[in-house]
Amino acid sequence: MGENCEGQCRQTQFAELDKVIEEYRGTPGALIPVLHKAQEIFGYLPEEVQYRISQGLGLPLADVYGVVTFYSRFTLVPKGKHDIGVCLGTACYVKGAGELVGWLDKELGLKPGGITRDGLFSLETTRCVGACGMAPVVTIGEEVKGRLTVEQFSEIIREYQQK
Image (cartoon, rainbow, N blue to C red; front, side, top):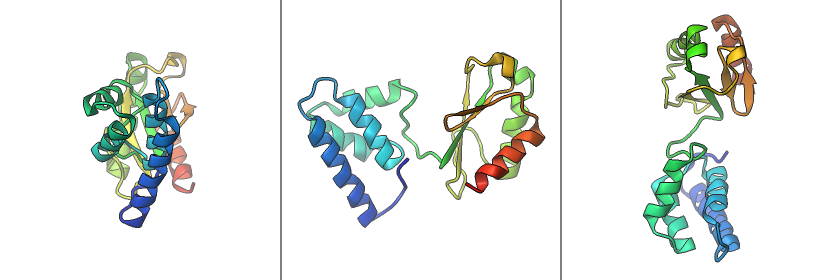
C-alpha cells in the first residue's frame, strides 16, 4: 500500500496517479481498475484523489464516491501497514473474538475503524468470513488465522511488529 506523506512525496503520488488515469482514459469500465491502482499508490482514497480521478476520467464525483463507498475493498481512511480484520459473526464471537478486539484496544490502543499511532496496524471488525469451523477467525492482510486464544493472537501481533 501507499504511504502517507506530504509535499514532494504527495506530488510524486499524484504524478503516478495521473499516469494511471491517462493509461485508462477512454476505456469502458476504467473506474474500478483506476481506483484499485489509486488505493495502491495512496493507501486509501481521500476526497482529493477521488476528485482527480473524476476529472481525469470525465465522470461525476458522485459516481466515483458511489463506487468507493459501495465496494468494501476500497477505503476512505488510511490503513495500517498490517490491516487486521476480526470476525464478530456469531460463531467467532461465541468463541472469543470480542476478547481479541479487547486485547487490541488494551495493548495497542487500537479500536475498530482505527489505526495505531505508528501506522503499523489498523482494525476492522467483520461479519462472517466463511470459516466458522476455525472460530475465532482473524485476517491480517490476506492471511487467515483461526482458533486463536488471546495468548496466540498476542504472539502473532508481536511477530507482525517485527515485519
